[in-house]
Length: 390
Ligand SMILES: Cc1ncc(COP(=O)(O)O)c(C=O)c1O
Image (cartoon, rainbow, N blue to C red; front, side, top):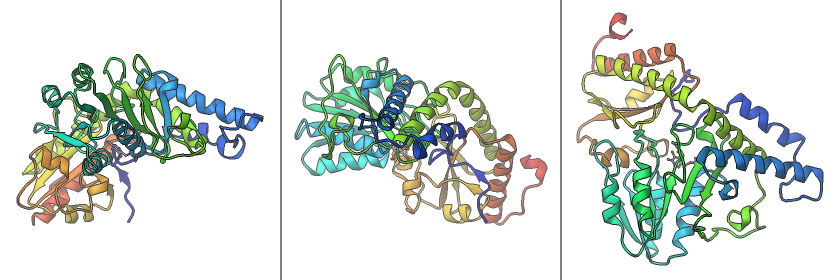
């Protein structure tokens, strides 16, 4: 049976029909190569790419010339981290223990290749302490990378404070803002950010397209390109531009900016409702992540005494995730759950709910009932009377 309630919006989101409408002409009518300005097709494609660049820049308080298009946040992170590190061979790099694998694995690779790596701890809610960042900085620190919002437990990091600390040093500040764009206000100036990664498919745009912000002023950040080619994106990310995808990313950023406040209000009310239902009815359930400064969409819980796999297999009507999508096949708790000290020695299931724009109150109530009943069943108890879970 296929899932009927989608609650996995940290993993990916459906394309907004308005985004799709903006993209469609660039497949079959305006199919020019944006690098070829000798005819109208190329010029129209190029104009659409430049408009999208403006739209992405507007979501970040950046200038359009500081936006580079990529295939997604994984690639943006790689270009930012490896591109900056290669300019400072053997330098000291700093990151946090709860970063996405695309940051942590890039950093670990650099460490194997001769760079020095410092990994900052987080507190039990997943917060990086800006004073720890300050203490970690050394004269040879070239780069600090801290995510804006965590993809598993939703922690919104104190990016402005961390940026201010990094700005007092010579190091560059990179922020993986993949889960934060369109969900929390971001401003590369106010937050002293030098490099920022984002992805379209987390904000109702298409998969396979993202962007990297690279500061130009007052100090232009220099990055080494990771691949060589036709010089597109000023040589930093060569390759024929994905025009429909880029148009979709621009449209998704513009829509996210418009609806951010209203979405956050509505979605956090649904999240709080789900959280309350589960807490009321399931003994041994704890919420992972902070009460305040958590993404509106996020609910991450540990349920003691049940297996994640058995729980998820028994919930075919719900699409949700056991921790992060990329590590959900592992039996071990995720590195984020370990870093906040929430890993259990005994049997326990960690579930991540990601609520989205399209979810309704009825869906949230149905999802709560399904989870509560399944947990009772696994614990050998009859389903809860409906007034207990309504
Ligand atoms: C925080 C974070 N960074 C990076 C990525 C990778 O993004 P993409 O799928 O665009 O490569 C993800 C996606 O799960 C994410 O949540």
